[in-house]
Image 1 (cartoon, rainbow over the protein chains, first blue to last red):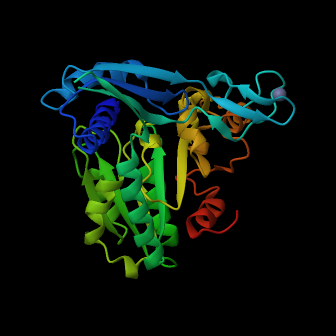
Image 2 (cartoon, each protein chain N blue to C red; image 1 turned 60 degrees about the vertical axis):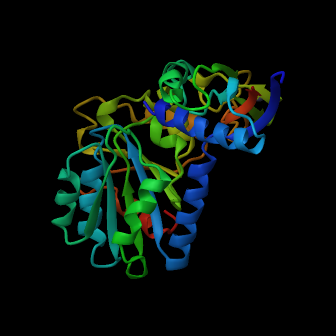
Length: 113
Length: 217
Ligand SMILES: [Zn+2]
């Protein structure tokens, strides 16, 4: 599992934002995790509190927004993908090689105090 | 002061991506093709690397950086073939990241290399998040792992530039369903080239060698 590494990187990015805003601490943090990002939201939630100890994010509430995969089907346009079928249109099985969304791993919002 | 909500929308791994871009620039400046090899534990990465060093070692200037959790066995095994092999000890971390690769680069003379093979830690999940600065990513899957691996780990396959099916010499013994495996690979990564090989028997290695050289295959 690499979610501890991801949590530490998240905290680094958040600290930078806090510095830019002259804020001491964050009380809440929102992260967007794509279904194709290879990060397991539950594992990130589990890893975050310990990683945040002793940082300005200690005790902050972590919310994870799960972003579904969306591919571009040649027949149906943008379609929400089913991860167990791979990058294929769930309606017609056409390959949808490009992900329009779903591979993100982003710090979305911070609530500063 | 009341709480303020700020919208950030920043990639959590941007520091890694930044370091990966530095690695990529260093490789390009030195004319080195860097290849990131990822697979489950036991899929045959080290065997394929040994075979690669043996088959191509006189034609190309090859070196290897091996990511391992603790022991140095793989690097030692690879040095037997006369190539420089350096260990990157990742500790408890289950993947290589760009900074670990950057840290080992000073041990190589990049100007004296054609290809640097980066053997990632055996793991089909975590390495996919981390760009190392490689020119190409090879995902290995062995015939003994089951044909459904590509759909169980779609994110790893989705970042592959080539998928290598290893241990083809065991395909019959384990009743490997070649068509189903290729179908699942193509679902996970439509259009990705697939190479079937056996490091032990030496079959399928022409295509692999072409990939290592950066040629079409
Ligand atoms: Zn469709």
